[in-house]
Image (cartoon, rainbow, N blue to C red; front, top):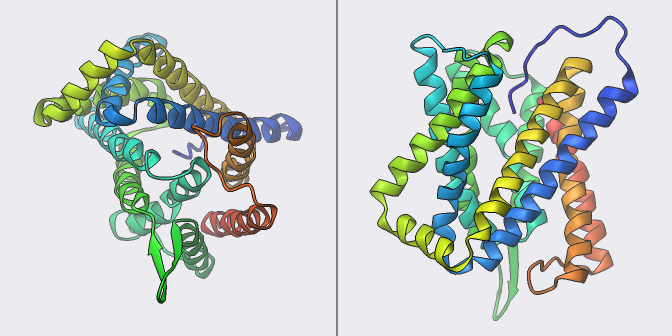
Length: 315
């Protein structure tokens, strides 16, 4: 998430930015749960799902372009933002694969690997200084992610195996983090809407390139359209919800402290755990969260450590 330093009002309403900062992660959690639903009902054709997002990128690009007053970005900023969008959709391909391998709550935790990866990339590329708190936060968030992705098996000897989703989400987070760093080079608050248009077009371009290079994606895309064309409608609604969440979080950044808004954004872990547990009771064939109270409390404790780690990274 891009932390845009926009001037704040002299007397901000604390409750307004606080409520917005909590609403955004709630909406983000809902989009992950809808994505999980889509992945489960289309489990045979998951490689084609990213091409639906590609289609929505084309549509949203023109919407943002009109909202920006039909503004055009100068070179080389326009190319950098296009590449950012390409990284976004390529990471999305890995994200959909990870969703087919892991529970929603674990996916949300692993998505919080992005702040420490951005921190690691910013150090050499943006010449930023790392503090002791940031290094500690890096270690804490990484440790929690590893705990959530660990699968324990008891056989002749005890072994600790990590979920295959970990590798896919590490790749996705790396691509998304590289996009954030590029975005920081190219975008200013004044060019945000125009940049959003270019990023969306980059999503379309990156998805088109992936579809041309990998026939499996095209075949799966056609199969989904043939079997369940309504999937495009669901993905369109979910993408709209995701865009709304991003703008609500941006508004929270304009009204409240950037660091605190970022930390509240990590509470999506708790929202996803609660909503996923409820959906597991209602739709056990799709959502398969572990509802043992002792384990739920343990996961909540680890999630609290994760939020602490994100807070340290922001300071």
